[in-house]
Image 1 (cartoon, rainbow, N blue to C red):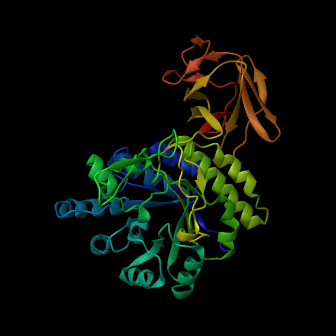
Image 2 (image 1 turned 180 degrees about the vertical axis):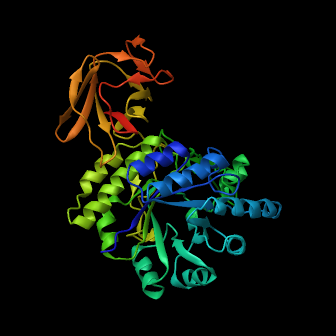
Image 3 (image 1 turned 135 degrees about the vertical axis):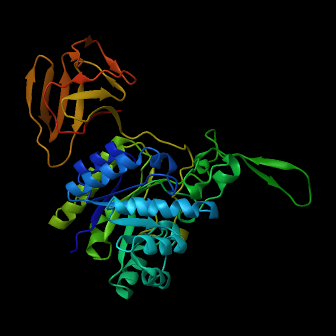
Length: 418
């Protein structure tokens, strides 16, 4: 079987390093005004973006720059400069959504590969072939495409790489081509400023053409979330996907999501891919990890079932749900931690660390690190800051860095079941 690439989101330089530490083969990120995630793009400047490319390559990973917005005429000249600048950083590919920008990139940076964005909505081998002839070395398939259709595209165009989303937020619009946010909030989804209007509660009304009466349609006390898509989760299908020898890259959505999200999803899908290749695939193991994330409920999307065969892809209750666990802290250097929620003495917090890392066990005046049922935990006896100040408990918002009892792997998280 061919081992697919694991492609993780890099919303900023810290998240990029987390993705690399947790097993990503490649990362994708953006800077400036030409991406579909403006908030994420603002978390990089040109200096940190170039540093991200360097760090990825130093780790043996690839770096893909997203330039997948839909530019207006007034953006064309600055876009030319942007393509030249990013190409000079040595990115491995551009992720582009439109034929015009593809043509521009080929003129300015002919040696940089082009990956066609999911926003181009490729669903069949006819469109895939045209984009391939135009210079795309890879297509990021429309989320609505099935695995069966991906297999046929690969049979027709064997030299074309196929990338699919395996996890993350889903849009109610066709491959994310939404207008609701622009109409209601003045924030343009297709220029990277989506306000997630599809997650809001709405009231539905019915009116007859022959009368003036307006009737409100009620669902329940939680409102009516008619456009609120559940999150994509293909972890249970990774082995089946790999066995087709069709998919070259499995992509995780989420450049604007948390550091823990990047770590947890990358870690879970790294396990799933490696286990599938080793013949010891265990879906429940990856599902357990992914259930710890905050989510809107999970769906396997359309990779196995056609859209018209589904009636369970929407969350009709809430726009966001809690996961099974709460993240309480993060340690970037493995020596000190910052609190994300709350840390108190004499309570056990599970340690989440990169798969290949080693965790030192032991006990001292600050606390202990121990193993239980194959998982690792830390309990604090004292909470002592880097400056030597002792606390009874630490809450989010407290910027003090607190000493760990023993050194942990870099970018470790502390979590607790809710």
